[in-house]
Length: 291
Image 1 (cartoon, rainbow, N blue to C red):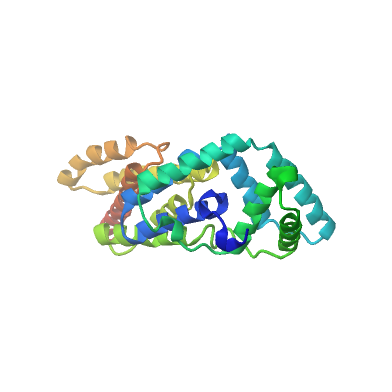
Image 2 (image 1 turned 120 degrees about the horizontal axis):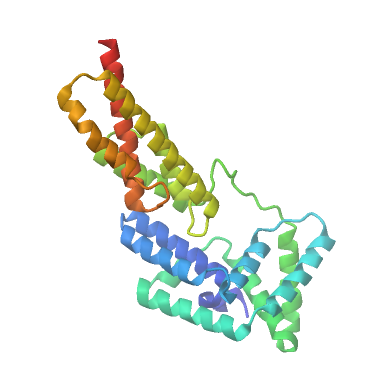
């Protein structure tokens, strides 16, 4: 079986990449509902504890791992073969079928499986090798030897990964940062302050299972809330305008009632506004002092 005849729908790496392309396309179109629907498909099927997730982790390891010693590469392939055989084939087949079914019914795009994927040939080779390992004596020995050699050579090739702080994720995340910034600027002002920019970046780089990212976001929410409360207190002490002072308790209630544990679009939007409000309060306090 060559790559031309490869069943892309059953390739765990290819279909995952196509889902990400689908999300990216939806974001470009400004269709957040469409992007969210696709992200739910990923969350529902690529979750820890499933055979599909186990295969995806194994597949991803063979795609991204780089070693310099051929004997180490050989040992990795032996361990990967054992891991592939530990996966329940029937359950995996069923879970892949359910994923394909949900993609067809939920996303409902005729060109979904035709989306181009970088390193397609490597992905096809790795998935075929995983399948052949599970076939055991029924596998095509010639192909098994050929594809084992190809993946062995692939493991010895250095993979250049972007620096984690400069480019923590792929184009979809950089695109999300740009779109979120543009939408916020259009609605609330021309520029984001440093708090807002940092918060938006963390949201864009977040994944549904990324507890570390969530913790970082919550720390930012705590900081924004604390800074806003301090700015409000300073404004209240320095400003003598009774009409404005009457609004302080209302603003304070808005800030105090904002959740620092909820990482949702609505709550994040509220904190972006709180940060903007904090800047306005600080400007008001400084103007009073300068006058």
